[in-house]
View (spheres, one colour):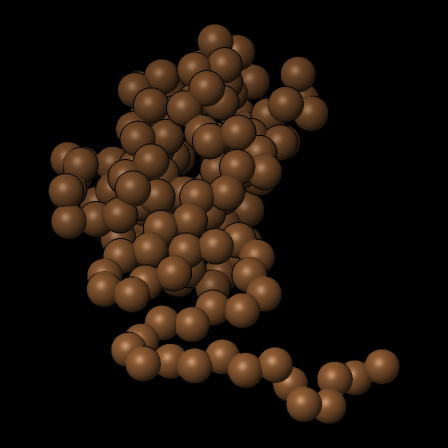
Length: 144
């Protein structure tokens, strides 16, 4: 089970960082915000679920870890302390791990979004041209 916890915490890292960046230390008290991106809201949801499952005596430690990680996003020690609090909760509540893992996109899932006139969305692309009156001609001296 420890390997699953470590894998989840690694996958959730970007969501947690986005949540702390968007909501700050108040992430545990704030409601979901439609103006905040889906990644940040997913991180907020993870932290709320962790918070709800913590015992009342364990909540101050989680709050302190969230506050420290939010105050200095570059502080790797603060981020590690928050990860440890999350791991502790997941070790005590294996069902929560299953619930949260199901909420995250599958590993390797790529979401690409293009928005706006002449936008291009692609994971890999050879040649992309947008605009009016564009002409594409073959290269006169192709490389061998």
